[in-house]
Length: 538
Image 1 (cartoon, rainbow, N blue to C red):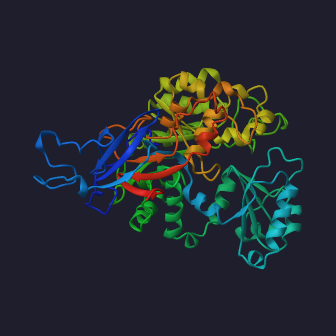
Image 2 (cartoon, rainbow, N blue to C red):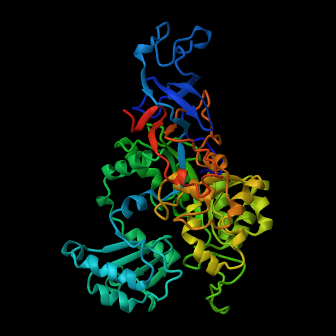
Image 3 (cartoon, one colour):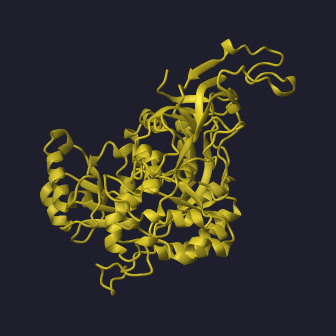
């Protein structure tokens, strides 16, 4: 999301073909979040034109003007307007995933799944099994994704990976995207070198990942299918943090029919000058459909918890104090960070800065304060207590990924022992008045806002006891943080980015303390500007 908190929704008529507006539609027999009487929602020109008691006549246009979507002086008989019977389902604002690497999410489905591995030996066994398939073994490169080595009982080594893979180039990507395990064949092919572990971390790893993506294998049809899958979970928009030419590629995708989502695209430091030279500003519309808008500058200031590269004030317990990165890694000097942030600010481009460790968050807060600019801190996983109020004081948004707390709770207990009361401190931030936005960091977690909301509200998964339940968010706060309306209620005049869900999202946490009702929420329909992008009813 942009540093200026821009509303990326354009005016009515921007989600269909250029110059057109979706046909009027009535959603009959809906309830709003929290319950209440049945209503009919009248949609036209891409907006919610009226919310009236169910079965009421169509509302009269104010001042004798034409009914929405009809020519001046025309009648608006109810029989001419399409309708859908929601049968008591709940109507909520459309959902956003505020942190996505969309190409990585698309391509992850084509990679060897390593998510269920618990050791280097597990990974090697899966790789051997995959290479036993002649089609896989014949691949130019075999790529796996999803291992998390933070608590492995054994260590990855180049020798063991070479023994398992032979001459087939193999690259394995960690679940947090901050680390890769490469065999000698792939290292030779890409002209890179690792130590005896076979691992690359942070910037060196990112450079290799970029070379493992074959754009020709990712057609617009694959992107469109993935976008529709997101719409099936109620998603109407994403913030795209892929390290790619997002400004150029996404307008081409929407023109080719990838039109189920609004997309706010980021720019990385190596492309910032080009964006500035083009005169782009955060909030500018980039495509004819009005679906793609310019977002923020993205900078990574430290690493991640699982790779022990998140930059912290205290050292990691398993690293020697003399190790150059015993407290994690600062991946960009703060002077350089402030310089590039200042360039973006002066060009009216917002900033979204990755900070996971508490020392990184302190430094990034200092940078925003020195530059007197608004913006977003991405992740904000470990915070010093005294830094939490600074987010609100500086007008900053915390873009958080609650499912990471479920993925990383055991690693955090090991590597941040004695500090986890201030890890993923969502409720503490809410109490301090910090503006929250929820996301997934897909493919690190699923592109599914219901998963993020469930983790934020329940702090639990897989039947485990809640992890630091004092940091649970209430359902209304979590739902609002997964939208762009900052409200759980649909209102007259809203852009008709809407979702019909099967049960009330404002769950009773006394009867559902793990928030399973959110994680398993049924979605029946999703609309983008009044246009159905997913229809599970008709």
